[in-house]
Amino acid sequence: MKTNLSRVLLGGISSLLIFAGSATAQSSAPRASKGKIMNTTETATFASGCFWCTEEIFRQQPGVSEVISGYIGGSVDNPSYKQVCSGTTGHAEAIQITFDPDVISYDKLLNLFWKAHDPTQLNRQGADVGTQYRSAIFVHSPEQRSVAEASKKAADRSGYFKKPIVTEITDASTFYQAEDVHQDYYVNNKRAPYCRAVIRPKLKKLGLED
Image (tube, rainbow, N blue to C red):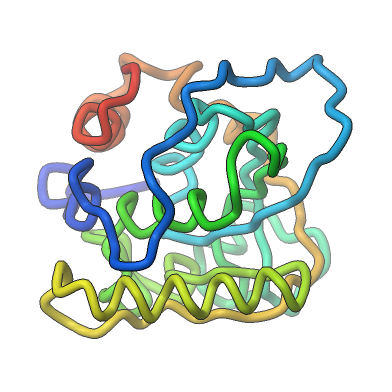
């Protein structure tokens, strides 16, 4: 489980951050419900520390129909949460996002990704330490790689971060859905200490519902 909650860093989530060359603010179109079948959907996969912290951030975005917490980038089939937390499987805790590109672009999702964590920390986010908490973008196409690389360069040049961004950009491999207890974690555990101390402040700084 997560430890030292009061010392978890909340850097990189200012709602005022706009990177050079980035798209403008989020579309005001209503968020698609999970039961809605959209004509066109794409997949984005991001790792930015504990998946409990970022799942709700992306779930609230217009055009996002589903966010799943899981594991990616490792060498063990169907790893458990305990195995991934041990840091021995090579997986990262990650979220896989299904979105409608006609409502929210991949570039806009990337802009939110930079704001939602500190991409300058190597193999950690705050008190959570290990390769399982690394910052990573797992791309699903050459087009996504091109957009991700351009977005990373823009974020690095923005001057917002005091250190270089260490986020890795790599091809997506098999994504394993995490156990049910980790899905919609914030929605189902709003009164839990971790949610109140870590997730809720992130949501508030990004101007999202808590």
